Length: 197
Image (cartoon, rainbow, N blue to C red):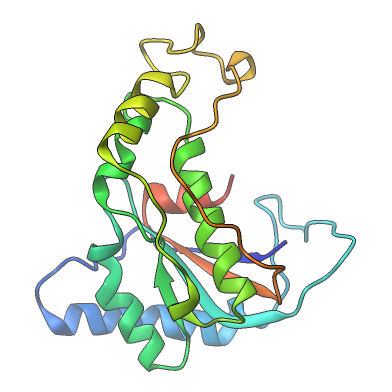
């Protein structure tokens, strides 16, 4: 497992006021410094996931944006945490990458982006500059919107996740090297919920 988990569902990071961003960063910093990076990750059920290989904690974090928000909204928070000694990067995506998930569809496209950021940050031992961009364009988004299963329109033939067809989201996501450790996840709103999957 390459991640620990933190959810700040009520945290405001898009305010233009600098003090509010600093307060949010201070709360995240305090939490990361005092708890998340000092204990093994636990599942939603309160126990550590089993693993054949336990990785050490890396003092680094990935911010998972909330519904219909992207990395730009969380850059000030990531920069503040990085300046406080916790290298932090937001999942590298703009807000329109959420479109294929609208209407109750599968969250697989978002999970792929979270996995991408976590794997690259963990492989780079917390070096935020080593997390590359990935290729995903408007045509990829359009195709994913029409093929991503589930939702009220029952794309893929069913609204039941157990019956979803296997659909691989479009885009080109460079592979990461082997992880060197575990990083923390900071999930905002829907990003926090999805990070627990």
